[in-house]
Image (cartoon, rainbow, N blue to C red; front, side, top):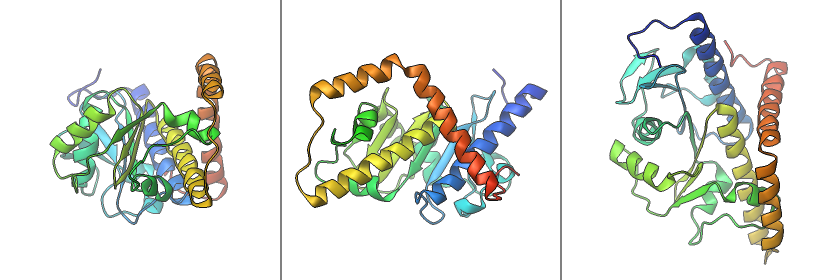
Amino acid sequence: MLNRTQEPSNVDNQRRLDARIDLAAAHRQAVKDGFVEGIDNHFTLMVPGCIDRFYLNAFGLHWSEVKASNLIEVSLNGEVVSGQGDANLSAVSIHAPMHRRGIACVLHTHMPFTTALTQLDDMRLEPSSQNGVFVQDLIAYDVDYNGFATAQDEGERMADVLGEKKILLLANHGAVTTGATVAEAYHRLYFLERASMTQMIAMAAGKRRMISDAVQSKIRFSLGASSDEVNREILLYFNAMKRVLNAEGSDYAT
């Protein structure tokens, strides 16, 4: 592993450029998907080859302005160590403790349907849709909303609740998705919001029809047996997303 005193190799430099491009692409896609909330919320990714710093969108930029070149590098203590701009306090408070536990990518949004779900007395994602079954076993639920996150103690508490799960629903607040790559974390973010959206619509319409336990087990078995295919689909989706951004003339990769 590299630390900040070592010079990165050409391979590390390429990995870091690719990582920046992927994280910038996620910001731009989040705008298209309606996940953005002004200049707030935060996407982060550990710098490849480092264990003590992560990429973050500079506070004050709209996500439609985020590019590979203007992401800042931030230490796990919240110090900006490379790039221009400020590190949002809430971003450091929530994300640094998760990165400290070895999680590569952490995405936090107040996307509308998932956030609406977290405002319910029972904020569980139900098995009333295929997408719901796809993500429900990945979710941990933080039922204790403590206001704005302004210290890493709060992030440590959230990380404890997340545990070995991949998605954290935050009561009255929003969601966090994680992954080994930006593609993996964003795929979970997208399908979490889709599942939340259809659940909220169905709840407004009336009583839902749940997917049976037997079919849920069948889906879980299929997902486990085809994990390589799921990973391939995640990468295909993210690459397709970037191709569309490129075709639209987005400058996220610059």
